[in-house]
Length: 124
Image 1: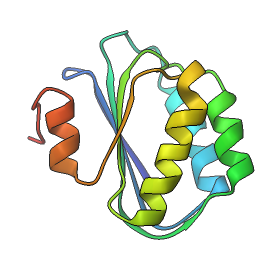
Image 2: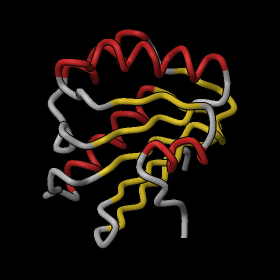
Image 3: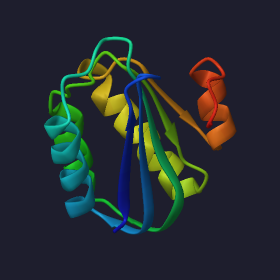
Image 4: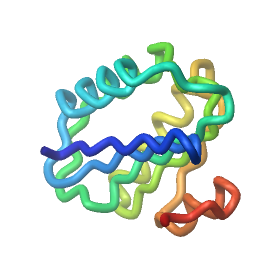
């Protein structure tokens, strides 16, 4: 499965890790799973990790659709890890389009940068 979601309620951290060939259907499934796990508090933080992605096949129309959709984690501090140029460019496009529904998005190149952006609360 190209999507794995880890929710650490004690650290108020949601980590979504994508791997392999990622498609629109994977993104839709991830959003559905996140919504099913609600409620989340305003202090939650989110990492979306594209480090293990080999093919990034998410359409621009799906990116726009997701960006316009309200999120149960809308106020969360959110970091997208995008080491490849295609993942980075797509993540920056999402960041720009989602500014109305998700104001706190940062795009970085490594998981270490992601944890640093969230205050240094690294993996444990």
